[in-house]
Length: 344
Picture (tube, rainbow, N blue to C red):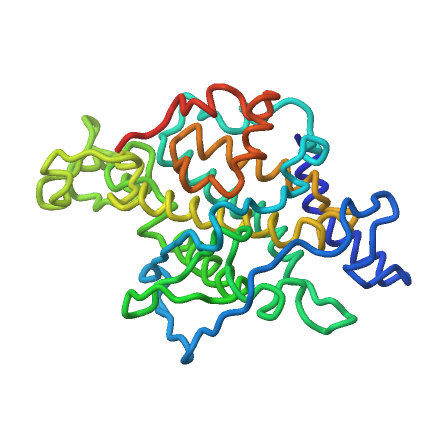
C-alpha cells in the first residue's frame, strides 16, 4: 500500500524531471513499455453550444449539480472500453484496501468519514493535475473545452451543473472539474461543515482550559472546575434529541449529505478520467500510470460502498470494471455488500 501512495505522490516530480533532462514533453507520445491498446483516442461527445455566458454561485456551499443520461440509439451499444477488460484492470498494489477502509473502533464515524473524504480528494487531485498539464505541442491542457466540451462518462452519460436559477446547463469537463474542486475544498476548509475542534463541552477539548475560572474550585480551592454545558449554551437540535452521523464529534446535521455529494462528484471525475483520458495520458505516461489510477479508484469505490456513500445507479458508468474487482476480491465482500452502509 505504501508503495502505491508513494508512487502517486512522486510521479509528477519524476516526470517533470525527465522533461527537464531532455525527456519527451509530448503527452500523446506512447510509453516505451506499453504499446497503445487501440489506435486513436477514446470517443468524445459532439460539441454542444452552451449559449450565453454562464453565471455560477461564488459560494461553494451554494453550488448544486444535476445529472442526465444522454440519448443516442439505446439499441446501439457503446464500443467496449479497454479499461473494462480484465487485462487492464490490474492494480499497483497486492490484496485489497479493506484495512484502509474499515473504521477503527475507537473513532467516531463522523471523524472517519471526514478523514476518508479528505484523503480521497487528496488522491484524486493527483490525477486531476495530470489532465490539467499543458501539452507543449498544442499549448493547451490535456483536458480542455475543445477535446472535452461536456462533462461526460462515455456516450450515454453527461453531467450538467445547476446555475443560479437552478437550471441544468452543460459545461466543459475542465470547468465542471474546477467547480467540483472549488466546492469540495470550500467544504473541507469550512470550520462549520468540517470542524477541526471537538464539540463544546466534550472532555479533553479546549473547553476546559478556556472556560472562565470563576465557576468553581476543587476541594483544595486551588484548581478551577470547568462548568458543563447548560440549556443556555446548547443548540436547539441538541435539546430536541435528534441524532445524526457525526453529531457527537461536532459535525453539523448536513454533514452526511455533504460527504455523499462530494463522493458522487469525485466519482464523476473518475468516470471522466477513464472514459476520456485512459489512453491519454494514463496509458502513455510512466507515473502515475493506469494501474495507479485503478488502485486509487478501487480504494474509492470500496470505501463508498462499504459506508453507503454512493448509490449503485451513480456507479453505472464504471460498473463493468467494478464487477471485475468484485469478482476477484479487490473489492471485498463486506464493501460490495455495504456491510456498514449508513441508512439515514
